[in-house]
Image (cartoon, rainbow, N blue to C red; front, side):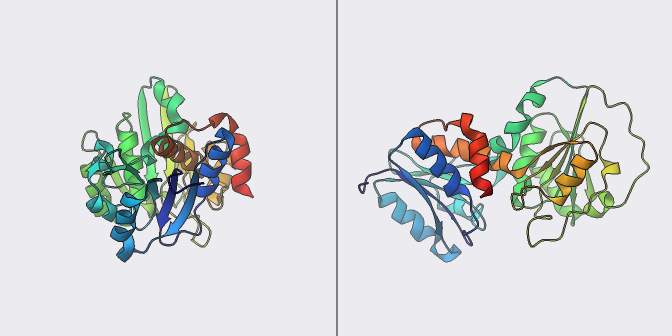
Length: 287
């Protein structure tokens, strides 16, 4: 490879846990592209310096962005995609042909991808219960509200939840509650859910390795709900296992991880990734 060989990175602090190099490396290998993708630990104080260096590197196509940079990086960019600007977070930076840096948010498309077929159907009513009000929830709130979902947003701080809904989903009759509301059993009797779409999403780090489990009683999930957990380590969380045992359809965190990476890959390298090999990619991610 030469100094002009295309390459991209994922940046964050810490960054050792990132699986993005495995995903992008797998696609580059399958497509036979002469390019590379790696991870780089970038401390907050070094963010501007990193981006300035990238502008000058001929082969640098951009970077994916993880915590704690998703919001502060916006002030260092030359332009923002409208969706990223609306969400207030950037997870993908792409160097344009003129050398300027543009910020995108592919978390929305990544999250929605496994729901595409269901969202394309017509429903009498759509409701999503979203657990968590952190950075990941921003993209989920925006994406689901844009598809006509009535949202119930649960967090430790109800005022923060209200602010997020007002900012990102002003249209619609949405609701706020606490995480504790969903932890205890309920005797609520759901009405007929035929023709409805119900989703329960863990958008929090609860259940991640090293974090407390998510306390959710599945009596709060309407019959036929889809249960979605964005946590990727472990990939089968206690939340998903209990949902499966209760008979609910589930979506794991690799779905969003791979989906958001696919959109970024095309922005970086100008080619669609070979998604027909997703099963093999999942196996590689689990090793």
